[in-house]
Amino acid sequence: MLTPAELRAAVEQTLDQAGRAWLDRALAEAAGAKPRPDASGPARWELDFASAGRHIRPARIPRSTEAQPTAPATTGQDAERGPKTQSAASAVAQAQEAAPDAVRVLLLHAAGADARTVARLYAHGTGAERRAVLRALPHLPLFTGPDAVPLVEDALRTNDTRLVAAAVGPYAARHLSPHSWRQALLKCLFTGVPLTAVADWERRARGDAELGRMLTDYAHERTAAGRPVPGDLDRVLALTRPPNHEKPLPREEPLPREAPPSRRHPPSHEKPPSHEEPPNHEKPPSREGPLPRALTREEP
Image 1 (cartoon, helix red, strand yellow):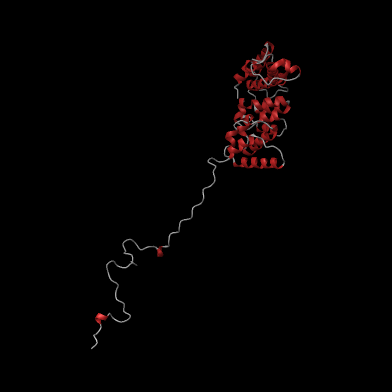
Image 2: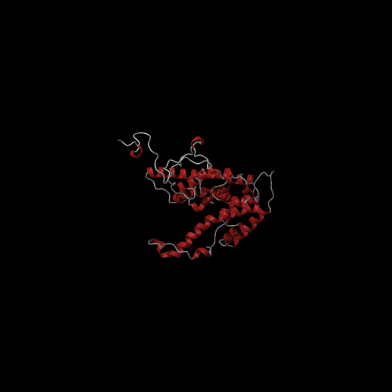
């Protein structure tokens, strides 16, 4: 994420002299604005916020995009223009859309807009103005609190993928509840918003078993309906598994329980009875049957 200074430098590279003059004046007006709780109408910088699209027109292509060719055209006038011209046209189109949004972010930052002002600009703004409000949240003092969460949740209920992508930035990563954030990520996968737009998704998805269950159910539903599963789903699902996710080891047989005290072996100071025959001793004579012949009386 660019800082406000970096964002301004990037925008100024695309503007002509008149555009830079307008930007300097608008930002100075916003920076000098004071709270107007009793004002009946919007401040001057708020009017500039709404009209930025009419004043910010990129005049040239940033140097970083001039040498990026695209696939050459094969038919019509595009083939005659060549890859470099096509790259320039694409860069201009992107800059014409991004520059007004960036200027609105700079105006909100310069004015230090509070939660009430941000909510009003969002409620009465166009889609582009709402995107700018959402993208400006990390640069505003209210970033540390949850006051703007209703704006993020409102954007996530829309079908505008550009608005959804703006809503899942650093503010959402910091303040959305676990359930709301899971739903937001699932919507991004469902609508095709790339994971690169979801701020800090790896940290929030790591070890989230509930998110893993939701993604698995979603994948099964898509597969059962014969519809493709987004490629990014596997990347998120892999992070939801707990670390060292392996098959459980086989359980060992339980050890035999210790015998109760009455059946234990006698204490060590007592000599245990021996069941073996004493060494080097003859067996005692049996008391049954006749005595040995040597001990009987001789017959006459």
